[in-house]
Length: 313
Image (cartoon, one colour):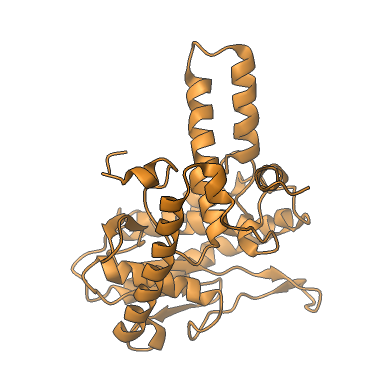
């Protein structure tokens, strides 16, 4: 790593913090166990000197744990990526909207639905093929309105800087102009609806449990970009909504300042664990996973590896 990382963090392959709303056990498992395993596996696969048996074992690790291969994405997550790609092409590269939408729609059609959940991902994929063009249209309108006073539109950047009192930097990636993020909303299966689908709703506030994840994300932008007012654009197939400090209490400076203090408390706790643990086994033994949490909705091979590490049968 190019970062000057403390020895007690580097020994665990933990180089920076991210949004602490993700369960600590999941974050440490990903950063300190899965990613180093994958890095080593890919090095083995690319090394001409590796034996066939070594490469076979490496491919087993990749197929079980690499999110790009093992189906860790979802129809909604992949659709959101294509929407942002289309918005970037339209707003930044000034590509013809119809062309941008068709390019991303073509990529989305090639998505292979995951097979390890309840099987609904394939149905969602087909539904979101229908919705994607309209979601792009509304996302573009919302982003243009949110940044109407800006001199120009810039895409995603990485913000990586230490928060006061912490030894490791906080890492976050605002989608637009170093202060804003795009959130896409997609229909969900519904047995109560005649169509079999329930339209996605757009939040009017950020008080909900999952919406607060976005507040913590925005607080990270705000803390690292000099206090620029954040904005969140939510888009679905029928409309868009912009939340910013003027219409959302959770994005005002005083609320964000309190959130940043909570972020620092969470990061400080993680740093204390990293300092205290000499080995990865000791570190993961200091936290306990709750596999019922939504963050652990992962492919079977990934969950099996986590249960093996924590000694859960």
